[in-house]
Image 1 (cartoon, rainbow, N blue to C red):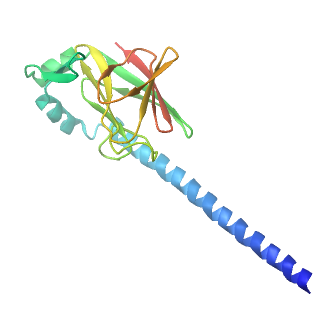
Image 2 (image 1 turned 45 degrees about the horizontal axis):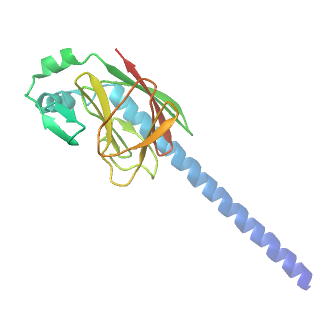
Image 3 (image 1 turned 45 degrees about the vertical axis):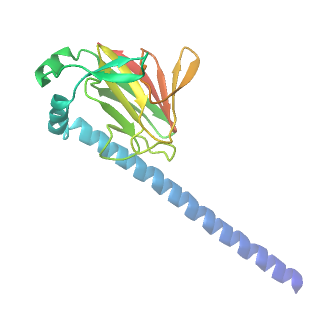
Length: 194
């Protein structure tokens, strides 16, 4: 009799563990699908240029910065019109993202600030990872060169160049052809297209 109760108990425990495992697996799959859908919607919105008017207005009022590595500060230059900014922007930035879920290419204009983070609606590229802040990274062009810096509070960004790695912090770092940025579980290969 005791053996039968033990066997029934073990079978019941196996049944409960199997159900719990399926629920966990289903929740994980749903989270992955939801993250993919949110990223696709953000990409579709970007492709359809739904935010272009807002960005053009913001770009027209933004002042370009002269970056001084000696003082670690940004110094404002004179105001330029939007038309002059468009003519001066000759470099495009192609980011090729590879993550555990997908591979994507983004072609962006660094003369407008490019934001990468986990919050939808505030970033050009969404990284669905708990290690990435709502707005983690900013990429911009100044003086014909493209720079990156960390605007997040807790997330880390790693820049790899020629086998060497550095953490991107508040100080601007110039991006070069072939650099690799790592944010959370996503890796971005940098291509500067002239």
